[in-house]
Length: 197
Image (cartoon, rainbow, N blue to C red):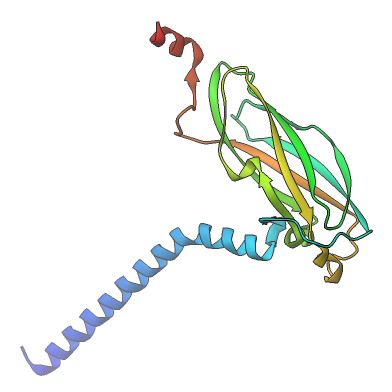
């Protein structure tokens, strides 16, 4: 094998390794895309994604914003899910405690998780939750009901944002989805009682 063939073979090997590296990198990025997008949305409020906070701000403004509550369940969830209150008027910076109610009318235990957003999207960066049922999975046994609290505030910084300062109404929307393959999913109550006897 001549020097020219050896060089060409070496270049082909380098090209093959480079292409394999690019493919591996793209595959890695595709798996990282969802968590990275979620982090991006949480940091920026993009798409109406709300923020998490450890505590409420020290400042409460005199200006009020109406917060409307919306509840949905994904197909196949089986739950009944609704807001206890339809609207609350709150001062900007004030801590609010609101409730949703979930009921499992099925004969199976169902574990669910809630996704959420606010509209208009510009409000997402300023709508902060301190506590929320959406932070963890929820399990309801057959026939069981639960009150699900959410504690939130609207960050006073909203008045300094030219895109958000004129907002007078925000809608907080949740959708519950079943957690597939999780313990408690599709546990037939009759089968469970037979196994226990």
